[in-house]
Image: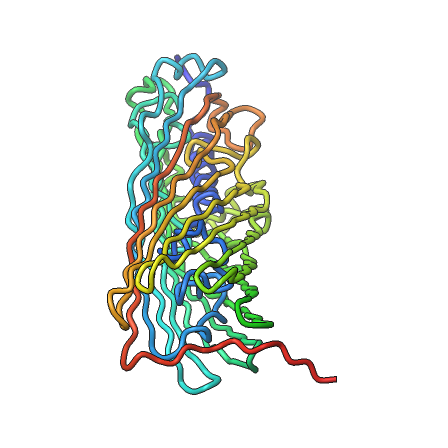
Length: 441
C-alpha cells in the first residue's frame, strides 16, 4: 500500500513525532520512585516522614535529622516491566497484518543511595543520588505500530546535596540543590512512499541535558511516636540538545540538530508515621506530581534557527496514595507491607505505544535484618497491577505520523525487586528522641 505523503512532509513528521515520544517517555508514568528498599516494602507509605530511612531524602530532605551520627544506605533495584500491545480494527489496513508488538518490556537495574552526617546537635549534611526518570521499551522491529515506536531508552541521574537543621525538639527543616542529567535515544519506523512497511528504515533521536532545581522539606514530631513530613522537589529546567537522523530525506541535513526546552514536574510528598505500640507502626503517604507543567514544547532547528513545530502535550497531574505497616518481629528482624494506588498522568487521550501506561495498583512486602549494631540488610518486592488500556494514534490525535492510524490495547504489569543495606560508621550514636510538643503562650 502506498502512503500518500511527500518526502519533505515526512521529514517534518518524523522530527515532531520523535520529540513527542521523548517528552512522554520522560513524564510521570515512567518516573522512577524506587529510591529506597525500605520504603518500597511499604509501597512508599510514609516515605516523606522517614519510613525509608536516610533514603527518604528523595521525598523529604529533612529526614536526615532523624538519623544520628554518620549513616549511609545503598539500594539496588531490578525493575522488570512486562507489556505487549495488540493491534485491533481501526489500524491502517496496510499495517494491521504486521501483528503485535511482542514483549516490549526490558529489565533495568536502578541504583540509589543516600548518606547523612551529623555535624552537631542541630546541624546535618547529606547527599542523595538516584535516577528520577527512566524507560527501556523495545517492541518487534516490524509490527503494526512501528511508525510510532521501535525502541525507547531514557537514562537519568540526579545528585542532591542537602543541609538539615533541627530547629527544636519537634521541628526540623532541610534544603539543597538538585543537579539532574538525562539522556535519551528513540527510534521509530520512517514511512517512505513506494517501500513496503516491512522494510521501512528507522529514524532516530538522541539528546541530552543537564539541569538544576532544588529540594526542601520539614518534619514535625509533636510527640513521641508521631512524625509528619512534608517534602518538595522543584521543577528542573532542561535545555535539550540533540540530533535527529531521518534516512533518505534531504531535510535531515538542515534540521538534524535540534533543541527543546523542557520543565520537569515538581513533586510534593506528605507522609505520616504513627507508632501503635513499641513494635508496630502505621504509615500513610501522598504524592502529587505536576505533570501538567509540561504544556506545549517548542522544537527548534539549531541550523535554521526557526521552530520546527510545537508539541501540544496534554498530561494530567499524577497522584499516589499509599498505606503500609511495620512490625518488629524481634530486635533484629522487622517485617513490613503496603499498598498504593497511583493515578497516572497517562490516559487514553495521551497514551502512545512508547508508554502503554495507566493507573496502577501496587502491592509490596519487605523486611530488614539487623546483622549487628552497624549493618542492617533490607529486602523488598512489589507487584504492579495495571488495567487493560486502549491506544489510538493517527488522524485527529496528538500522535499522528503520516495519517497512519493505529488502534490497539495493551496488557502490562511489573515486578520490582530491591536489595539494600544501611551502615553506621563509627560508634553507634544515641537515637534522636522525640520530645512532647511544648507551646509557650
